[in-house]
Image 1 (cartoon, helix red, strand yellow):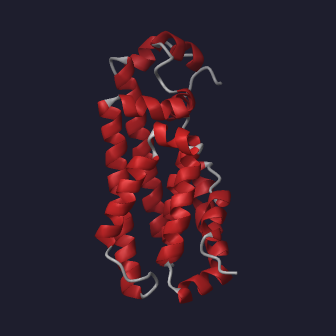
Image 2: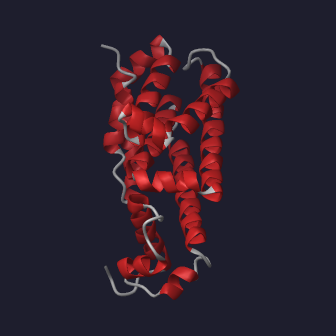
Length: 231
């Protein structure tokens, strides 16, 4: 690690640490040692350990909403836009460790941030679904109803107790949910079209963001597109 990180680099490194290990088992002094920084730099973020954690949670989920919007606006094809939007959530889930998830659920503030993020994502997906229905790309359904179904599923799938019972990571759980969701939404004609060209379109779209964010969405996009292919 460089001696002096920029504020953005520092926050990225701190986010990675807390996503991986959570906050409960770490003191501010231990975090400072791991980050090779002074305690003061951490306290510049917030005044307590929990507030530092919540600031990281807020920034992490806000950045995911921004990435999702960037992907939507970069795609003209609606089915591809929905797939890459979902891929942001799947990739994010792959970065979340078990302890981080538990610590979020144990904090009323952090849990509220996570709730808001999931609500915002499902409302955005409902808009995409309504537009897809209007275009005849998706099976006729009510976007707001679908958003409530997705939000309810998302809130329950993320629970540590459920994930332990199902023997799944949060990434596995959301990947399975989105596979079923996409398989049920697409009309036959859209599925046929996607089977021919969708995979390439997803890879192109997510690669644009990967190049800017230094994040590899290619594999995630491929897995999501597999749900659309018809043998």
